[in-house]
Image (cartoon, rainbow, N blue to C red; front, side):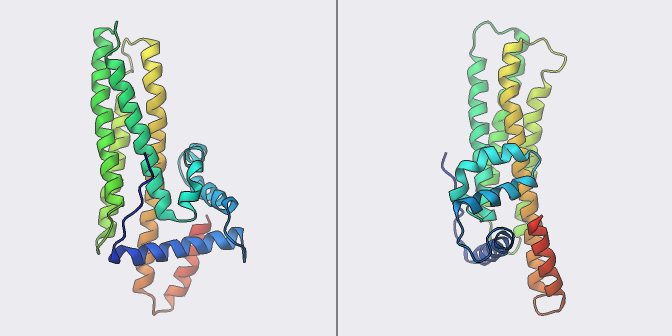
Length: 233
């Protein structure tokens, strides 16, 4: 699945450019003053971004091959994280469907797998809605739109966890349980990481919009400093 490029929109482009500018300032201050951005800087940027996620190492491993696409753009980082997560969820959903056709399943196993098919399918739908919505952010209610994205991603996590919870205290072969659980755990962690990145993005949007509202006041200087410190964290 190719990384989805966020479509342009006049109302969102200004926000995107300024957010990218602010994030770029943080990266330059920390890593490469007066130096041209290189692939090493892209990797450093990704490492710092992944540090704020629930599973930093998995975040880095899953996104490291996309550093040249992400560069130092937080919008592309979030979009890429959602794309990678959606791809993993789709593959897992296909695996669960394939297991349902396996011969020799007990009635209990067939029932659990059937439930997992529904849960993983719902997860894929919710992640797709999140990615589509993220690529279409525009207008004055961006924060509300991001809240919807957060809700869908959270629902996807719930669905993923519900699938594996069906294994508890149930008679199911180790082979079937291992195949499903291993994939679901990875997808759930990728989804959790994507949510962490989106959560930070929403906070950045809030800070930016507050900064714009106070642009002509003395408080904007202090807020700008706070934003830079936040980006360096």
